[in-house]
Length: 471
Ligand code: NAD
Image 1 (cartoon, rainbow, N blue to C red):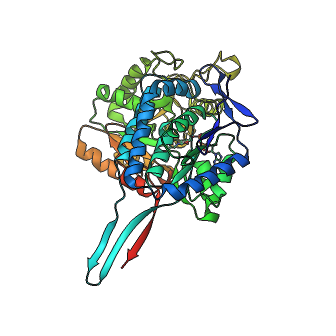
Image 2: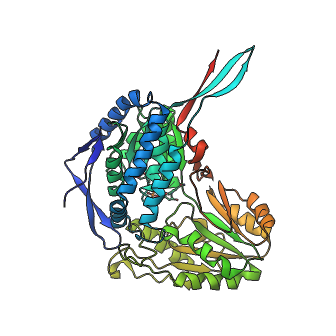
Image 3: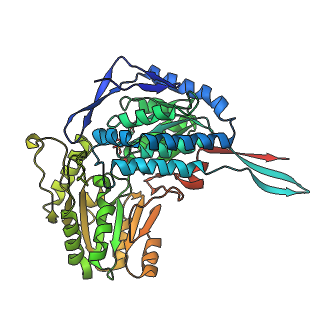
């Protein structure tokens, strides 16, 4: 099996050692990733620093054109990237799986390429002229998780390069391959050193977050790692965008039609087999419709085929890795005796599993705040349902969590749904849908779900420092 290579200074760079990347559907080797040493990371940062000097001085139009060419490259290689993504990440090719993720990467790149950072005149009168300029920061370090290895790489890289920065990317050790290939393709249209990719173990992360030649870290991953990164970056006063964990609540109001909302509830919770930051991770349902909502949701969920992502009929895939599989298993084992298991929950023990980290879609009713499956982020295909009678109680329980990424309200009376939404402590809130992010709307968490936003003009500006010119 031919190993993948690091991408540094526009070149494919071999390493002495490689590590195996497992296909989560088969537990067989999907590919060999290069195991970078600290010296490779130093090379990547040095080359990005050199490339920055020229890239920051390019015209915005040239950088926009380069981003459009990246979109075209991804589109031209869409099927190759989707197949590789399914092999290492496990998500199905179809449904909201790999082909959808690659399509999203193209769309996000195209949209972001249309943004710009014009100078703003704050004052122009006989007392003087004041201009606000947006300037690139320098070398951006991008640290990625394993749930959307292509789309999240695009969210980090494209606004960074569009605004004149250069980038060193570190993918998750669980899913380095498609990101390496993506960055190899980007290097066919970008000048050398503008985007580099270094893969290896978690130990590369702290080198990046403490490095004096990296000006900004953009990180998507768990709250625990985010806190370490935040602390580590303080010494060099790094700019930070931290997109961290979520424990999104959905609140179902008493006036819903349970049958009508079942599909939306299902996808809100089970997109990417539940391994989505802004997935619905706990569902509060009013007593009047509680049993009907449970029934319709389970009816819909039972129709969803789970299987190896290469099977064209599969809609949900395996959990991506054994560590996450064990987290989901432990949370469900804790919750099952406390609640009512409506479906799933009966996972074969690890020792008897045939192959693959398949976890059955699981829905457990009659749980409450204080149960681990409600309080903690499961990041997998297991949804707890909580009954409520008074809407104020539901809002209080939804907010009683350190996370504040997303939330949703489901109801026919849109004004009442919006009233409830306005009381939810989260960065995004959806009405009668959940998790529908889009490239023109800023996205980020409040409370411990992160710092800063991605997407849209506000997200782009996070890759810049301001300089005010008084004349
Ligand atoms: P993780 O925190 O375990 O790892 C993420 C990345 O951090 C990996 O590349 C890892 O190698 C690196 N890393 C590990 N230790 C580090 C350190 N000390 N310093 C610097 N980097 C380090 O997260 P994960 O398990 O890959 O991803 C799942 C989590 O990500 C979930 O909590 C999920 O909610 C969150 N997530 C958030 C968003 C969002 O936009 N808010 C999106 C996707 C995922």
